[in-house]
Image (cartoon, rainbow, N blue to C red; front, side, top):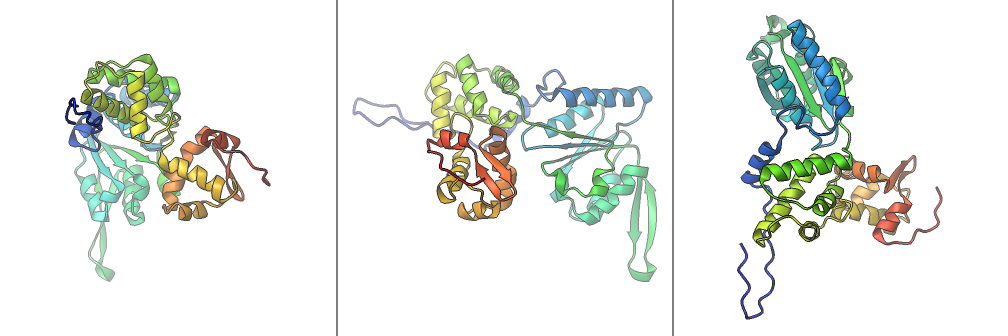
Length: 345
């Protein structure tokens, strides 16, 4: 906590904003919706999932295998947990990078009980050899185990109890076609409407026991990148600022000050987003310029540029993909306060 100012005209203390703490992780769990009514947005996906789940329950069967994909923070894991809750099933959780060998997956599958949900996050990072074990498990509930090596090797098959595989990924394009085709239903989570983000912020503020003015809610929603996880992160940071300065509620002033400290502008652009735009405009005349060149210019990995920053810039209409590369749109010039130059499209 910063020291209180004295009569010696000390400088205004800088707020200490908590970030990445264990408390944050606990709060994230508390803020996670626990039923369909609390899960705001993604209406079509919820409707389709309800049909799949209700039909499976009425038949006394497990649900089809499900694949959720979309940008990080849109609610894929939460949907998986809601599916498990609705099916009254235990959920075993793992991730693609954690399953290094076929034996790792075989151990997980052999310990499943009837009706269990197996949730694999970051499914696009599964080893292709590991995927080979999944295919018969998903299709015929068989686990094929190879014993021995060379000419003396033999394969034994074990039955697996009925289970549902729920996979989540931010890169559906990196999933192999054989794996992707074995899911009974695939759902793409899209960015949320601003009104839905406002509703999420209001719900989270109520759970945290803090009051946020309507103006503050709108400011935070506009800066939340249409993503619930970002919205909750910004709300937590404004709560920190409010507590440090003993303010009674999250006001418009506090919301704006928090965004300023975090270097986030009114439409949610962070420092790297603005750097990408200014690089395209200032260094390459507005484009078109290849993504490899952009990544090299800002000393960033191409995958980060394409999968983390670019989707939001495209969503806002600040850049455009062309056959020649990325092109800065007029809105990008306006937002950065730059004057558009004539260019060849």
